[in-house]
Image (cartoon, rainbow, N blue to C red; front, side, top):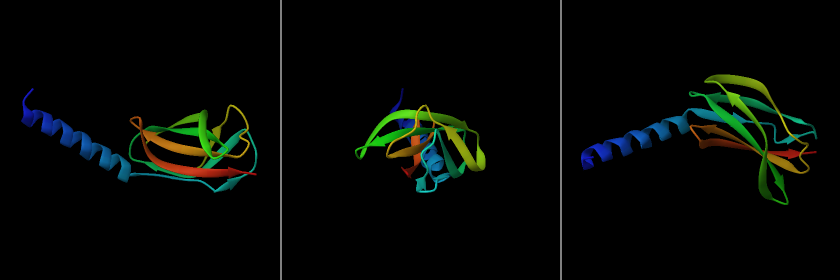
Length: 109
């Protein structure tokens, strides 16, 4: 593989990641009640992806306790079922092609 071709592949990968990141948004109310579901107020992405929800315990991000696929486009009031009720808080991450493009922190009452 020539160096020119390697450079072109790296450039395409970089531009693709930058455009993915710039075209995605994830917003959630910063405080939600204890439940087996959290609600993302608004999610918008140009590409299909997945939202991963991880529990936060003692200020440390822990295991994934919920996931939900998201299609390209915009959604409001997007519920995500959780495997268990979080005790302190969660971090929701929007992943596109395996890369985190936006994050929302949610405190649990």
